[in-house]
Amino acid sequence: MVRLVVLWCPTLSREGPRGEEPRRFAEVLDAAVELAPFARPVRLGVLAIPSKGPSRFFGGEAAFAEHLKGVVGPILGGAERVCVGAAEGLFAAVLAARAAVLVEPGASGSFLAPWSIATLRDPDLAAACQRLGLHTLGRFAGLEEARVLERFGLDAVRRHRVARGADGELPGLRDYAALRRLDAVRHRDEPREVQRGFFGERGGADVRAAAAVHRLEQRLGQGAVTVARLGGGRTPDDRAALVPWGSADAASEGRDHVAPWPGRLPSPSPASIPSRPLVVALLDEHGRRVTVSSTGLLSAVPARLEFEAGRPRVVAAHCGPWPMAERWWGVSRRRAHLQVLCDDGLAVLLRAERSRWWLAGIYD
Image 1: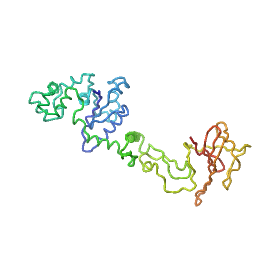
Image 2: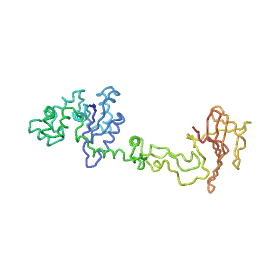
Image 3: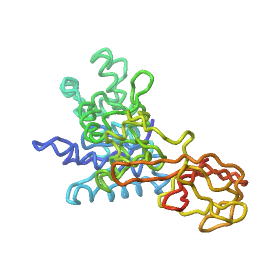
Image 4: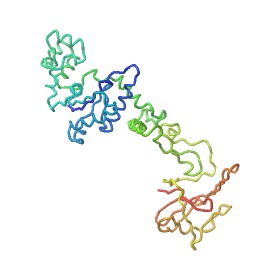
């Protein structure tokens, strides 16, 4: 049976009239997931974590429990009680959290024995057992399974297995309605349009990514997380844009804009675009600067490409130029683009503008 560490926040176990408990518990859950990625909510105010991995990483179960309380405490303001317990099976681990104890490995059965029969969450079974003098889990667990089935039925057999430590999952312990409410709170800022699977399902990677973005935006602010998208335009630097995660533009990947954009540069597009303008020198075989005429022709065959820093590169081939004249109705902009392949395999896109050559992109 899997050993679990359970965190219990008593003040968040019931949703109050203001309905803020799910939101606050979502913050607790996000903090716990950062420490242990497999942390999962059980019900409002209760979350469970498999003990094996975190215990090894933090130097023991007790050390992990203290670290978990130290992380969660400030989120709740420090004044609210946070309880951590550990045991084999979810049922025993939840009771261990209520008692704030770390049950020794293999001792979950003896730990459960003195607890009331009412902890099995079946009022009818509890009333019948109490009439028979079976007030504790230990007394109930001592019955033979066949007698339990004969006297109380199949559902009581499942609870009997939980009471004697043979099964850790008590029916009704997980509150799925509260978990759906919590999931809605945690993912309320997800993008409305997402890529679906073949049958329309949402992928697990999408859910995990949205949860990670939500945690980052809680720390950095709304809109702090951006994604790259292609927009409308004729050149790669015009089309590339960073848009906030979850915005309408972020959900429009793969859609082309309706504008025809005549004169758009041909494919392929550069894999990298400089974040700031980089001046380069394009020279002919005599060391003279290569320019683009008003008719869109090169003044000479390019022979050498020089960057601001680094050795000159020999031009092995080139393609273009593609002249562009835009915004004739306002501030006119004239530029031309040229694809250049160097002898060392470097392939770049250059832009001629304002009597200079600029690095516009680098191909893979």
